[in-house]
Length: 394
Ligand code: NZQ
Ligand code: ZN
Image (cartoon, rainbow, N blue to C red):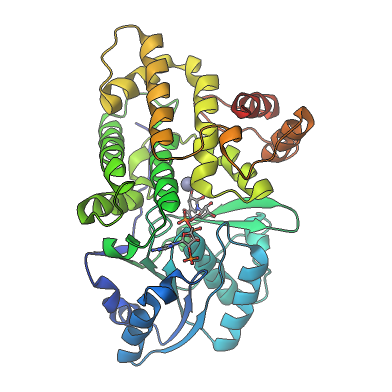
C-alpha cells in the first residue's frame, strides 16, 4: 500500500426532502450572499429551484440566480458567471444540478475569490488556486461525483480543449442528496451516470500497485452494487432504493476512497475527454465508447488483475487467466450495451470519425501534441492512444 492522504470534508445530507435544508446549511457555512447556479432548466420544471431559493429566503440570505450551464460546461459561460458573481459580492456558491453545474460553480468560486485572474489560468496550470469560496451542492444526477470530488472539468470551446483541475479547494462543503430528485432523468442520462460511476472506480482499480486488499474489496463491492442496481434503475428511474444506491456510490466512487494507497490510471477518462472536446458527446458515453478498446489493448500488461476483476466483480469462475480476463472485458461491454450506451465509435452518433488522419489528430490532441503519456496500468503514449482509438473505431 502506498502512502496516502484522505481528505473528504464534504458534509453529506442524504434522503427525501433534504433540499429544503439548503439555506440552513449555507448559513452554517457563514453564507450571507449566495450565488445559485443551475443548468438548462430541468430544476425549474421540477420545482426544485423554487424550493431551494425558498429555503435561502427563510434563512434571510441574499441570493442571485444564474441558469444556462450546458453539459460539458463551457469556459465562456463560466467567465460570464464569474463577472456576475463578483458584481454580486458573492460569499457562497450553490450548485443545483449535475456535474456540469457543480464544476461551473467551482469555477465561479475560484474566479470570484481571485478577481484579477482569468480562470483558465488555473485550468491551464499557469497559476495555482490558493483561495476560493465555499461551495454547496444540491445534486440532481448521480454520475460525475463532483459533489465530493477534488476535481472540476471545463471545456475551452475556442481551442476545443477539455481539461480537469484538481485541488482540495474544489471539495464542496456540503452536498444535499435526495434520490427522488433523480426521478426526472432521461434514461440516457441514467445510463451515462452508471457508466461514469463505474469508471471512476475502474480507472483506479486497474493500477500497477500491488497488494491493497481493503481498497480492492471496497472497489469490487462498489462495482457489484452499481452493476446490480444499475440494471434496475435503467428500467425504472423511480425505484427509490436503486437510485439511492447509485447516488451514494457516485459520491464514494470519486472521492478517492476506491483508489486509496494505489497509483491512479485514469487513461479512459483522458481518452474520453478528447472525444467530448471534439464532438461534445456526453461524458459517460465517451467512456463506454472507449473502455472496451482500452481494455483489449492493455489487459496483457497484467491479465491477473483482469482475472481478479472477473472473479470478484462478475463471478466468473475460470482457471485460465487469459480466458477469465477476456470474459470480464466482454461482460463489461455487454453490460454497457444493456444500458444502451455506445461501446465503440460506430455506436456513438455524435462521433463522426471517418479517416485515419482524424484518429491521428485525436491521438495528437489527447497526448497534448505528443508531450504527455496517459495511464499507469499501461503507460500509453501518442502511438498507443492512436492504436486504442483505432480499435474503438468500429
Ligand atoms: O441542464 P439541465 O436542464 O439540468 O439537464 C441536465 C443535462 O442536460 C440533465 N439533468 C440533470 N439532472 C436532471 C436532468 N434532467 C432531468 N432531471 C434531472 N434530475 O442531465 C444532463 C447532463 O447533465 P450534466 O451535469 O452534464 O451531467 P453529469 O453529472 O454527468 O456531468 C458531466 C460533466 O461532469 C464532468 C464531465 O466531464 C462532464 O463535463 N466530470 C466532472 C468530474 C468532477 N468534477 O469530479 C469527474 C467526472 O469524471 C467528469 O469528468
Ligand atoms: Zn467521469
